Image (cartoon, rainbow over the protein chains, first blue to last red):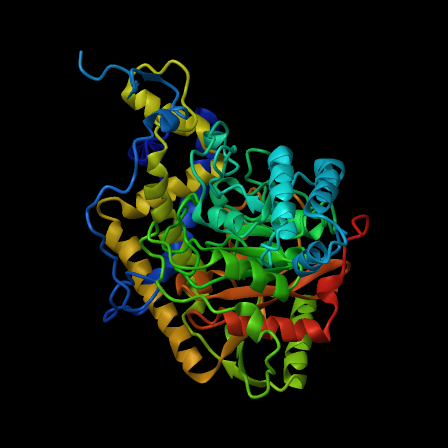
Length: 96
Length: 484
């Protein structure tokens, strides 16, 4: 298992991570090692096995009624945002 | 006062030998004096703690105290705490003041527990040595040149150094049990779904589970009981009554079948650790338990399974950090993509990025079946192995970690070696099983942990077995030099 520099940059692009040149050697070295390590799974006999969906048997996702349970606290929540104006989160211009 | 257990502190407050304010001040003083060398805390909430303690003293005076009223503890900095910095040991959340309490925090507040502060940890709980924290590594009080384990390393160091009498932790692949083993503490990770994950910052949601690090099994029973239970705000929370874990601690172990996990005694296990674990098995035999060797043939695949499933879930969970709504945001983004990628690139540390990228890769088109689906199938095989074992035995026993605490920096450059620290603990997470670690001896002054694993919802049996062992041994009462 090996990954080219472009492979690593492509994974970073999918993950929305900016990678600095200084980080490249570490990632190019460790990611293939991890992927090689997990490849030992391919030896396991799993032909008739269903992939596990939940750690507890017979548990299914609980449903709840679609009712309002929260009150509006946007001012409190937006105190943690870097850029807010008129109760709106600001991001760089998307449409010219 | 600082060598007392939670039960001892509670009894002292009730008998008016000391007040909650006095106990809280005592621990705050120790934190101030001893924490700088340990780096166990990220935030100390002294004012809030003293206010909570004063309120607890009033409640006790009015005859309204419960078993945990006025008792101080520390919370791992992964639990959201209303109005208090909640960082998950990441630069990404180094400015995040949580607007709400995690259910665990709320429940303990309601039980009258006093919060001393927030403990250091591996960044986003990704690590086994507490060296990935943006706030710097935590030192092991048994030897300051060694790691305390991770990811709940700050909680472990704080309790082992008696600068907090107990602490919360979380365990995704061993993050409560391994640090408990490396610091001579009692640590329990309950069944998946037993403790609410609401407000517990997510790493790998099908594996994450909250629990506690304490001085003994009795304290673990007290604290775990208070934080467990159904929560409609966590969709995987299980609606099942929580038994009084303290009520069954004294049950005799006569006739209990204890399985010795064959796969846990292979290569990689230090001989000195193995010998102490075997001594502990003899104690169980003396207590009337029957020992049976059991084999879980797929268990050796648990680490590679984990390193597909956990990164996959982490890459999805951590996509919420976008530099927009909360958390670190890069300076002067030139466009939206730059805002996302640079905020994440600058805000996350190396190990977190490595896991996000591993997860992104195994979930990506063309690789999903070969890695992710395959891992979920092997996970089912491992879970079935446990099920077969628990048809034969009541508990499984083995070592918690393959070695004692290692030197700081010894494994940071080699992720695979670091990942293999959790070789004995990950299986329980994959199968959603309750598991705990208790001290079972020392090698050259460094603690060794014994791991107990039970079937789903067998926390009471685990705590009972741990308590009975602790009635016969004194390992859990030892205090590192300089902290007595």
